[in-house]
Length: 401
Ligand code: PLP
Ligand code: LMR
Image (tube, rainbow, N blue to C red; front, side, top):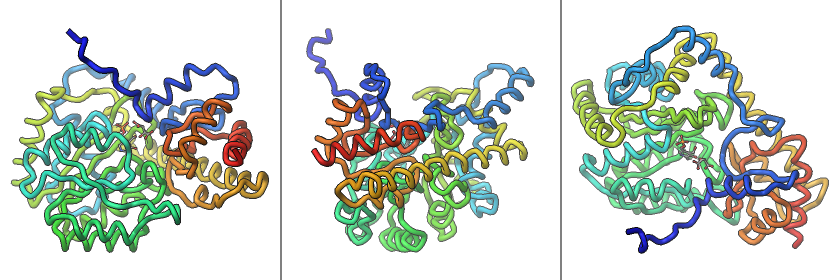
């Protein structure tokens, strides 16, 4: 039956983990997938999460199905975290929100909703480059994917002129995907003043902004600061779509906790939108998983746990920033590696777009047992005090050829 099914390629990101696992060299380092590691290179379960789980276990909750759009306390608190307590649509009961299978599921629900109900376009513009999964995800949702310029190889920074030009030239009403903070894979974000210009173009061209916020707190260490773009757009009167993930900022990766929301004109409109979100979710997976939503909701609704969580998010962000500084020093001062490395320090969030080419990435995997995506992206969180010198030395050797 399946004789005509061709073998597909491994996933460009998750496939790296498979290759890493198969390598038994003690020096091996996995800088592929964006998953936080502590100073010992170990996965990190947050203390706030452990405490929330103890509270949940003590409460002896049942295992009944959640409603189609998820745990109401969770969705309400997730929206508060993203939009802020003072958000106008939030206080008008005008945000439609559903729990989702982490950020990917949120994007997928959003894609499906827009494909079915957004009246002005079926085209979504994504940054070039963007998180690899955005492209098949939106195509599979029924949207056409096009690109706007984002990264400038020459400056290793934002191609702001290119971005503005491409958004200005997009057909009126097009959907535009914006990474809210900590852009994946480049680590390059617009400044607050550039966000204001983007908001003006979006208004002028009547574009529809779809924010992907997978790293709230991971960019600056502050969940409020990282929500700037989302809150600014809403304050300017834009209606937005928003995907949230709690994979990174609560370390809930495999629990698959996320939310998708849409701001609407008023409560009556919100109710209609809500009803259609249910109609999209029900045949996809009926209703979302329970445990992770309880964890996130417990943290978001308990002031003490919330505070501890904020401290831990900042701790993760700060450790990554330290690794950036150390890597920069190693490459630029200790090894005097050919090239300019200041971008390693200035990039934001979980990743650094090193500028290493495909050949160099291959050499690093084959000769040094160091795994990263073939676009030269490294997950900074995979570096620590014990492996960073070996990593920098190996990069130095790969660059010198
Ligand atoms: N969007 C971006 C930009 C990402 O980097 C990720 C990966 O974490 C996601 C969305 C969604 O991930 P998840 O489905 O694990 O929440
Ligand atoms: C990544 O880009 O490494 C993360 O967003 C994880 C993933 O699912 O790709």
